[in-house]
Image (cartoon, rainbow, N blue to C red; front, top):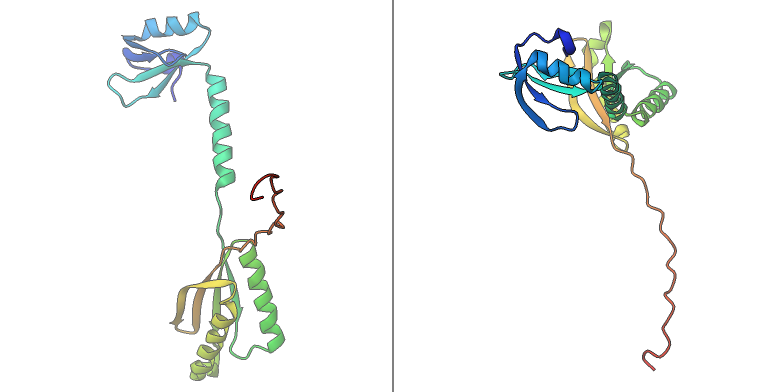
Length: 186
């Protein structure tokens, strides 16, 4: 944004500090009006013909703009893809540990990419790998959705999971009977 003497146009469409249109004026007159009010002349729409300039306190304007950007950044949710690497001959305990790790990733709102890697002679037993991937899909079903189905990519099978939104159970309030009004229904 250009301010005060950085503005290059001869004439500008001027908006005062209250938001009122002052029309098209020469740049020198617009700068003079801004100086009289102890404010800055800021070019807010440089693409307009003529460019639109506003009279305002530039320091307060930048502060408010930074504050809005910070609020917007707080509301953004960054989703990361975490990868779990497993092998077809994985032991049961190791498998359960990987399952717990995936569950933690889903709790944090991350996606999980499961890579089932084959080495050497394991390539001739891809059917065992597919069975293991089916087991992973079944075990993840209660807390994750399958986003990308298992894909055979040479020496590995890859599937991507997205965590389900946590279900918050509403606390039921105990029903309190309403006091009966006297004199009704006898």
